[in-house]
Length: 394
Ligand code: PLP
Image (tube, rainbow, N blue to C red; front, side, top):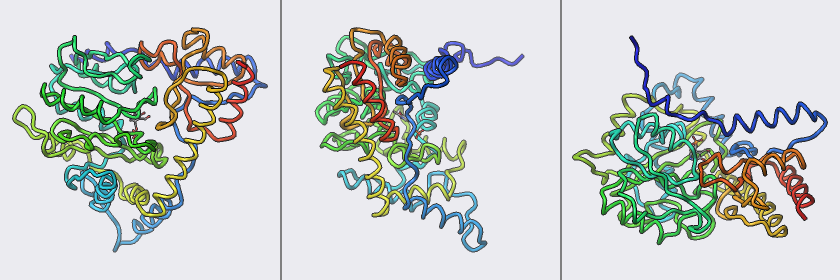
């Protein structure tokens, strides 16, 4: 008789976004006349920029001509895109080799798939609150997860715990989803020293690095020694609006040696066995991000979202509501006023001002009492939502 993976029974229902949808549908059913503004989603609203579309259209035309048609491509990604990524890293002083970069269909797949390389016996540190995929992918494999509390007192940036046995795998997400908090250079140095001294591996999620505008590190490899202890995940989703187009990349340095194996070699073996690469058209589109025009246009889009974030933080400043994030991140993380819990605040906003955000509790127990607004909506919706919020709390 077939036996299933029993770990799936240990997964909690993916309750957050379905519960939000349920409450919004219930309210809309009762009040069809009201216009609801969605400030909770992590999806982008601006279309792909012209430089990306131009590359994509050229690639589509090439696919229709025998002389320029592309069949299976290299599993690790086309050289032109890997060189583009190398050049990008070079801008913040990180030197990588082309075969340390693996192009994929997005960071989510790679974050899950990378766990193929590691034993289920490893112990894992995961910040709380954080992007829920880290927890669920480890539960699916049956790994022991230890949560590192991210609270107002530590700036939502957990550091190595002194009172807990070390972990083999450590997740860091900077800028963080959902809190928008960003690790400083010194904090990342502490994590790299910790990982090296305990022979642990850091899985560094840099999906929001393009939102950093001060001198905070954009890549873990800006920290000396990180190539010996960290894998980095990145994505064109939020940098360039590829949430529906799907393209990302993972950096696995050749210096990563664990348990007698080179992780770069293992990941290549895994990818060439289970993955047939990202489509040529999409990789050309991603290459468009690195053209001078593409760089300028994607920066403009990021500036647009950051202006939305500023509209939100200005409103919260005026209201005296505590928040973090929004400066180097598309997320603003606020403390629910009057000590309300996250879902009570959610219901209040939905019912009083028809604005939908994301309850912090949905990202982990330490998110209780906090709330996430996303800057990815349109300017008009952001302004309208903040106007309504201001009138409610002033
Ligand atoms: N990492 C974080 C922290 C995210 O918030 C997201 C998407 O919301 C991802 C990774 C996944 O990105 P992708 O669209 O490349 O799969």
